[in-house]
Length: 495
Image (cartoon, rainbow, N blue to C red; front, side):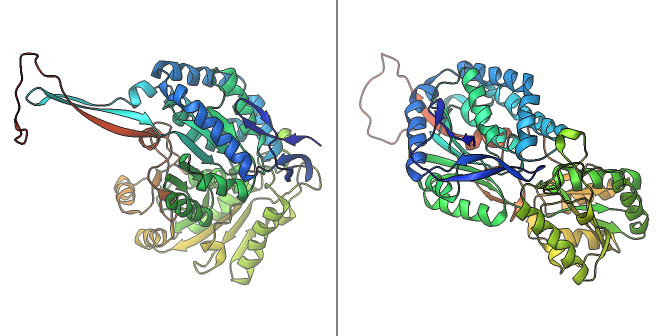
């Protein structure tokens, strides 16, 4: 069976470890390859390769680094269908979603091509007599990236293009569930002219993660994943003196006011709740409906769900499988919890007839009404195609419910009332807000990140925040004396 190896110092590397893990095709329910798990020594080998490459790469001109990123952008854009097929095979997402993921990652690559402008310093002349002050931005060194299974291409692309463009070298630890996309991008970066050692990939489990978090030569850690792991990443990396951006879990709400266009809301709830099989940190998992709109809205959502097809992502279906059988079973268990807690299961996805192999990890779109806020169906991040409906009597009740959540990643309001929308964007305690937009993921030149238990660390992902995160500012105070000037003065310098 094919083994997915590491990428160290510009080439495929096996390392010293013999441990491996399975990589499934979720649509078939079978193991199609194994992935090598890095040991602590293997991680050190990658870090040392990155460390050795850092002086030359950070010393390269801004324009040289810009040219490499631009060349990578051209390769990625031209061959995105090739990479998309890898995502469909290992993650299970349908082809259109896979290519869409790459497109959103391309936004950040394109943003990174402007690095000479983005990392400019400031200059003030004659702040004191004959004294000038200016700032420069310099790279950190070796940076670590730990990415999740749900976006094997897009999430790494949120981080490494800016890190590399800024002059850093990278060690990426992708999810062991779908690692091949990272190896594809490593080869594409080399093709684009990136010097060996600047970008490295180590696969593995907790051992490799801890090795990155604790390594003395790793300057920063970027992470996306569940909240408990994000907290662990943040605390461990911070304790080891690193900069950290750790993006955690979510329970995203869509507040629907009675004046909203319910057809638009129904379409948006379907798209945001069931896209990528609900395995998105920005998925809408709770529709908060202000009465009396609930019954009509639920009817519209249910009608649309009846037309969805679930199956193999290569067969033109709307939604694919979940990533593993264990995850599928865990998500499905919430349907039983909902029933036990007195909710109404309007559509039960456990009986879906999928257009794919019988052993695929299938769970159809599920709609649950009258979910109690005390139920685990409401409080837990389910991370699957389960859409809950909570009925409220007013805007104020809906807002209070959203603000009481421990999470603050993304939210949306649907209304035709501009005053209500403006009030919501100011009052809601969430980091990313949509107004009649169900998945408010910022474009590449803004920054991504939530509030509360959805984010831990020093800076958000991509955008200008990432440029600041991946560089250190140095301020220089300079005076060049006129050759005719001289003399000794032990007093404190004054204007």
